[in-house]
Image (tube, rainbow, N blue to C red; front, top):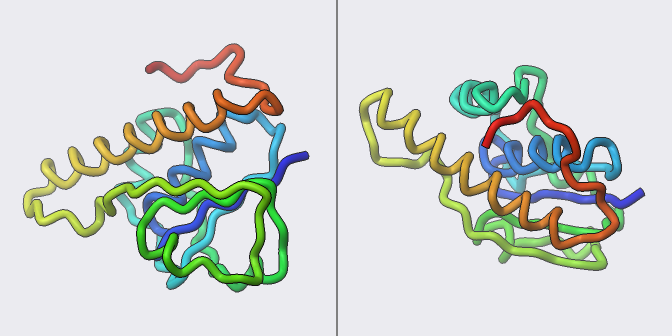
Length: 150
């Protein structure tokens, strides 16, 4: 079974959403993990926008990159520039992928509706990128029957 690690700075937004989509799209055909260089609590808007896509993240917890020290992965995906530049040498992978996805938590938008819109936009970008990632690999069963609407 393939192992995938998604890495970002805080493991509070982007990597959590990417992990959730990869879990959903691979349907148990891969071991999926995410971690952060400086983990923070899952942002509440992540839980809200993912639930709109029928993915319950209320159970999700941030993990520190150190939890995976010394491990080898088939794929290591970084979703921010900071994580890409700070990848530790003691976590290795056969294949590395970098996506520079903006952190929705750092949006300058003040009003709640605007913040939600930013999170939805980032969610959709992550969904597209993870679908493309999975779709380009023959070893994963892609989608099948799904209740998720696109």
